[in-house]
Each structure stands twice: as structure tokens, then as C-alpha cells.
Image (cartoon, rainbow, N blue to C red; front, side):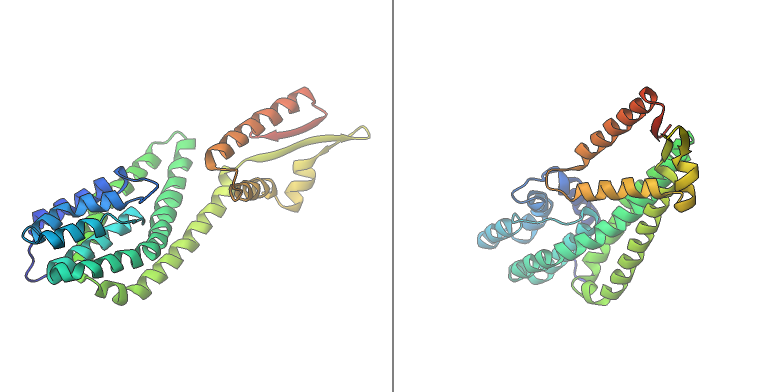
Length: 276
């Protein structure tokens, strides 16, 4: 950007401040608001040092409620720095409107991209290798996170700073298409993980003295992976309940698996084996 009041070193420092501060000051009242304010403090000091009224206004505006996906926040912070740098005190309100308007949509995009690709795709690869006691998975997981932290996020910050508000209009279609593609990829990977990583095997039920193998005699012919699909669907349904969260669900699944396996050994005539 021409006529920049910040050096490359200062901009890099601001990007690092956001990466470090965005979550460390998180609270239930203003969520990332405190992190956003502390990120912008050097900008406020430099731009409004000789204008106490503008400085006070900037401090108040930038401490307001803010919450988005941290990596996508790099773009918003870069855009707001550019706006206030070029527009001065008159751009404070514009910067506030921009960050408030973009934090929701950018959160959805960021959660899809970084959640689906990072968490689901690379996470599932890491788990698959880990099951086979192969360290390649965790190496790939680490490389992905380092790539995002040390290359992608600085690039996103610079993109927001250089492109400013025009970024929202010029790249909106591309971001939407990429978000939809990442969603499809994430759903596909989740489906593959259900079939390969969730192991539910039904045992033998004795009816009128005859043993019936539920897995081979019924499930494999009806739908081989019906058991895993039912278990995962049940877990998703439970997560939608107000009284359920991920920690409770994990413990519930562990307790259920151990209890069912234990009962299967106690009553061999009726066996439902989970992860035998």
C-alpha cells in the first residue's frame, strides 16, 4: 500500500500480536474484544498520539464485542489498520462497522476451511497412521499447523492490509466456492472415517437353541457398516441436546463400550461386542 505509515517490521509485529492475543484474552462478555484492543494498541498510539479525543474513541471502539475464527481475523485486523491509516480518526467508525459486519461471515468461512481441512482431513490422516503406530500422521499434522501459523496467516494479514475493503467484493465469489468445496470434502472424509475408524460388531444371539450371528448373518448382508452409522448418528443427535457436550459424550461412549463388552463376557449367549 502506498503512503504506508507502518514499516514491514511493524506490520509483522501487529500480525504476531493478533495471533498471540486473539484467544489469550478471551472472555464470555466480549470474547475476542480484549485481544483485538491489545492488538490495535500500537496502531492507536501511532495514529492518534496527538489527538486525545480520537484516541479515547479508538480505545472504546476497539474494545467492543468481537468474535471470529482467529485465522480469518488476520484479514479483518489488516483491513482495519489500512482503513484507519488512510482515513484517520474519521475512519474509526468505518473500521468498527467493517469488523462487526465481517466477523460472522468470516467465522463461518474460517471454521469450514480450517476446521474441515485442518481438523477433519489432516486429523483423520494423523489418526489413521497413529492406529498403525506410524509417526507420519503426526508429522503431517504438525507441518499443516506450522504452515498455517508461519506462512498462511501472515499472508492473510498482508492481503487484508493491502486490499482493504475491496477484498470483500473482489473475492466474495471465490471464498464462497472454496467454502462449499471444503464443506463437501469434510463431509466426505467424515463418512470415510465412520466406515474405517468406528468399529461396531454385533455378536451371536441364541434363539430357541440356535445361535444367530447378527453381524455375518444379518448386518453384513443388510448394510456392513450400519452399526457404525447408527452409533455416529446417535452421538450427533445427543450433541444437539442442551444438557450434552463433547466431554460428557466421550465419557458416555467409553462407559457404554466397557459395560457392553463386560456384559457380553458375562452372558455369552447374548453378545454385542464393541471394538472386540
